Length: 352
Ligand code: SF4
Ligand code: SF4
Image (cartoon, rainbow, N blue to C red; front, side, top):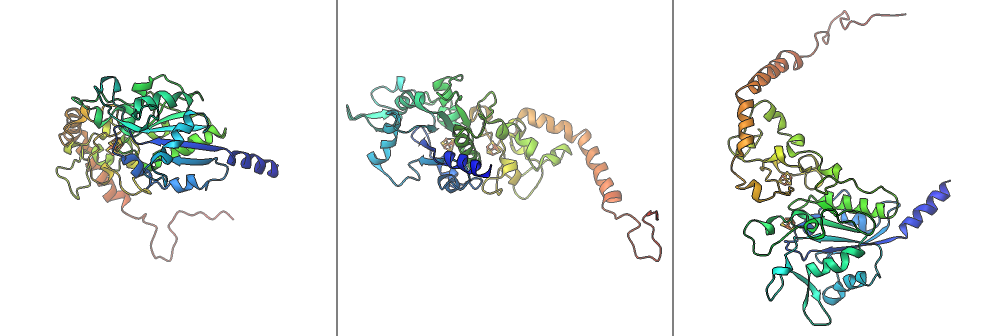
């Protein structure tokens, strides 16, 4: 039995999955930089096959690769020629609309040997997406357009699902997988990549995604639902200035109640840091409506402020009063039988 398990394990470990990570969309490479601080799993855990049973994963990303120039670009031509199989295509940055690029191009990567011209990101998508086992959009630019796709942008920028189609499926039957965030939370990225590697090796089911193509287990809850300041909000207690005030930040512009993100509960690096949980307003950087629908960031949200006022001037103070009173009178006080005495008063009844 055990030897069969080892045999199965070594079979999986013999699979090589390539991650072709293109940072050459309209991007700042912030997601690639963020990924280097992942801890659970870390990038090194994935590359060095530290997790038993996982396939060998080779990550091609220009921020961390030793190879440069044509040598670095070769993997993409090899993937197109069918020499790297399976491969996962990761896109960072939004895709400019090359149909309106005039005489130039918005974004390109490597050069077309036939004419010496840059190969646009749109062309790479057309060449590689049909051959990829999975396409992963990383960061809010690649998932939903993000900052480069703001109102009045000149490039017609869009996210990967806007380009490929929201119902697009890879040759392995997977929809575009979106890991939003600006940048994406480090462990969210490595966790999904590891999950995909295990899925492609036949060891895990396909990831469950929501209607915006986000992994459900990461983006199912709102920021408010997992924020450590939510208790203050429930009691109608709100901060009025930035700093050491630990109360709810809604009146300073926090968008947490209407944003899906796990950063307050996961922290940023190894559980440390975050946004509203450590004093910075949530500006909704994971959301498809980001940034336009949430600006100006530091202005109080109309509906959030309305809800806060209802709580503040109705049941909030009552909850706070009775809770504090109960704590003071009841729960901050030890039971009366815990004392020095010659008699036992805990209520213990001797049975034999
Ligand atoms: S999503 Fe944010 S961090 Fe990622 S490329 Fe875009 S701007 Fe940079
Ligand atoms: S808590 Fe808000 S600002 Fe922070 S990462 Fe999540 S969505 Fe972005």
